[in-house]
Every structure is written in structure tokens, then in C-alpha cells.
Length: 290
Length: 350
Image (cartoon, rainbow over all chains, first blue to last red; front, side, top):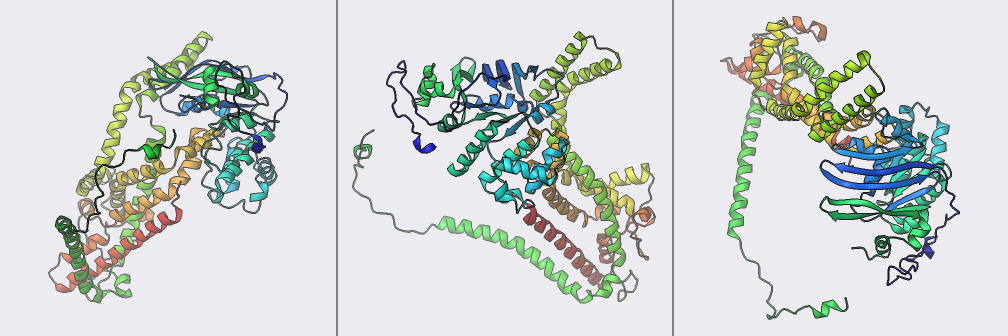
């Protein structure tokens, strides 16, 4: 699938000309229907201490779609992702304002238990972070804290879902650190699936992996989309183009409030890559950023 | 953009030949000084070691280890001191490990040290109370929430400096001379709590003595566990307590134990605080190893036996002291080897 993709096939000389900025084959491309929204974000801002990290984000994320968050470093895309499962609560000094509605409920209401939010909205981190235990224990931990019985059948099922079963079925009681980076990351995805979340957030899940592991994980994501809603932050625009249904492009603004991220535009991936409305998006995806 | 390298300015001067090797006398002198310093340190140690071995090795036998103390140097042995030390270490571990590990986990993972953090907590509480009041909540629950809110308002100002002072003082405590801990133990365990001048009081004193060292090393071990482990656990819907107790703590445990063994190997050789708590006694009977009877056993341990032998005028007793030192050093080496083995066996590269 990636063999057909190429960047900057026909780079437009004038941003206002709507010439395809980037041609990419999306193997999983399909007709998008405007399904129910899972996240409704209104005017979301994040501050770390006294510095503004991200502001004014309005974005809807739809069920059973893969939404990619792209943009240059420091544009706040990972920060925004961490708002979606209240992971920012764990970072000292981080403050989230604005409204995020999750399936019709205010996720940041003062009586909402952030622990339940994180159970329902799983997360896969940039660097694979298996627990320093056996493969089985890695999967069983999340299940146990959520009251799910970690039976051998369930373990097998989630490992099959994560396309890891064949590689690890004979070494379930081996140390997870003995796995390769790509296998570790798939274990982390399996671990997230094992607690039966509704949404999976992925923060640059392939940035520490080789191309083959990356492809395996992209394949897995397309598989998982049938059942879950996926939001992925990625630095790799080809990856965004390959796997995502919709794309949100974040960019960096510098003014008297400092250097912070904003959402430039969001649309179907097809339109973002072929005919972006915002000049900043066009510049970025054609490699003329900055 | 084009053939840039060709347009780089070429050095104007003619080619200078590579410099030849030359002596650097300053370097040699400095090198020599460093070696001398190392030599002095090692020589002092070696001299100590050799003199102890030459005096003490002659007495070292299984009989020496299994015999009781005696006024006849030919029959005197070390068993009372060994058993005393075992009981002391039992109580030291009992006090220092649970308290030290808990303190380390609290300080590293639960105490909020930044003002921003506390302010965020305060704001959340304020918002929650305002919403509950608007919803018409009242009663004792609400009153309790008000008290917590008032405390949050105070702690935002007081907390960070208090935690900072705590931080600095744990390091200071580790540097307090051990005899001060002896006085503390005498006052706290003997005078106030009413224990006799026993193995129990001595063990508890040594526990307090090594507590700061254990806290410091345990905190380092906790800090060495990447925060991604804790976040990974919490992202699966674990509470902070579950994440810390089931993932961070087990991952830090080998490091915490390594530090603790090294701290205990300091406690095992401590003499001054034991003398302050119990005086230099002369044990004629073997102490019981049953920890429940520790308060009835006179305070006696390896360093005290060595001290009391070394205090005598007869050469035979001085040689016995050297033999005792050999046994003490051997147990230190064993403990250190255990710590090194633990570290090599279980340390992970994250």
C-alpha cells in the first residue's frame, strides 16, 4: 500500500491553486458517513503553569473513525490528546479549560471520576511502556483493576486482536522486556484493548519503531476501527494519510501570549491532503513549513 | 543549493605539517599526584587489614564462633555477640524498612511539592463545593468539605515550604553523628517508653539511625522507575494508589533493597549509640534469638564485644578483638556482595 504513496508529486507553486498537495493511497479509504460524535470539544485551552500550550480548539471526533492529529513540534497535538482521557490531570501545573463532551457528558464536570474516564478511554504512548513483568501480567493488570477476570481465553483473544498471539503464545510467562520494540508496542495496544475501552488514544505510537512494525500497527488500527474510535497523534504525514479517516491539523502561533498551539483546520483526510483550506496546512503538508 | 562545497573558501595558508608528539610534564606530575593519593588511601587500608589478619587469624576457628564469652581468653568465643547482632538487626529491619519505604513512596509519589499543583487542587475543590452548594447540598458532608477547603487554602501557602524543609532535613538527619541517635534512643525507648537497656531498645535505636539513609536510597530507587510506568498503569484505569503499589513499588523494590542492605551494613558496625543506650555490658550467657524476649536480653553485639576485648590489657584479648573484627568484616562483605548481586540481577535498563 505504501509503495504507491509519494510525497509532493505535484507541489503547487501557488497555495491558492487547489492542486493536490500530496498524493497518498489510503488502503482503508471508505465512504465516510457523519456518525455520532464521541468527543465534542469547545474552545479547549491548556496551560502548563503560567504558559499557554494550546488554545481555542473546537473539534468533533466521530465514532468508529480514525482521527489523526498532525502538525509541527510544539503545536499541542499531544497535549490535546491527553485532554481526551484526563491524562493532563496527572501533570503538575497543567490546567485544562473549555468544554469536552464525551458521549453527551461533560468529561471535566467536578463529579466525574477521572479513573473511570481513563478506563473507558485507553491510551497508547509514544515509547512502548510495558510493565517490567511477564506478558501475561502486563495484560492481567488492567483487567484486574477493572474487575475483569484475566482468563487464558481472554488473554488469547486480546493478543489475537493485537496481532501478537502467534509471536508470543509460547512465551506468555516471559519478561515483556524481551520483546522487540514493535512487539512491545502491540502488547501495549493489547493491554489497552484488554480493559474493553470505547476509545483508544495513540500518541505517536510508531515513532520509536521500524517501518515493518509500523505497518503491522497501522494494519492493526484499521482492524480496530470497526470496534473502537481511534485518535492518533502522528509526526508522519504519510501515516496520517494512510490510516486516518479525518485529520486535524494543529499549528504553532507566536504572539504576545507566547508560543502556543492552535487547531488550524480539520476535515476528512482526503480533503486535508488534497485540497486544504488553510494555507498553513498546505505549506506544512507540502514541506514548505516555516 | 548547488555544488556548495566547491565554493567554500580554501585555506589561504600553506599546509602545516601535523605536530609531533612531545612530553607534557605537567600531565605526568598531576597523574603522579593522583596515584599517590590513591596509594596512601589503599596503603592505610591494607596496613589495617594485614595487622588485623596477622593478629586475629590464629584464633579464628569454629570454636571461636560457637563459644560463649569467657574470662579465659583461650576459651572465649563470639556466639553471644553474633546472636545479639542478629536480634538487633531484626528490630532494625522491622523499624527501618516499612517506615523508610512508606516514607519514600509518599515523598516521591504522593506529596505535592509544587505550588501550581496545590493551587490546581484548591481550584478543583472550590469549584466542586460551589456546584454542590448550587445543587442544594448540605449537612455534615458539606461541612467536612468546607473544612477540607479551608485546609487546602492554608496548605497552598504552607505546604511547599514545609515539604522543602522536610526534604532538606532528611538529608541532614543522615549526617547526624550516631551518638546523638544513641541519646535519642536512650531518651525515647528507655526513659519514655520504659524498655530496659536491652537488645530491643538497641535495635529500635539502630532502626531510627538508618531510617534517613534508607529513605534517601529508597527515594532514589523510586525515582529511577520511569514515570511512563505509572502513567501506563493509570491510563488503564488504575487509581494512583494501585499504579504506585502494584507497578512502581515492585519495579523499585530491588533498588530499595540494595540501598537498605548497604544501610544495614552501616548499622551492624555501629558502636557508639549502643554504648549510650546500654553501656558496655559483659554478656556471660547467650542471648535468646526469640525476638519477643529481646527486651529481657542485655544489649550486646559484635562491635560491643570487640570494644570490650580491645579495652583489656592482655595481648590475648587484643588478638581476640582482631578475630572478632575479622568476623564483623566478613559479615559486612557478605552483605555488600548480596547488595551487588541484587543490583546486577534485578536492575533494569529502562
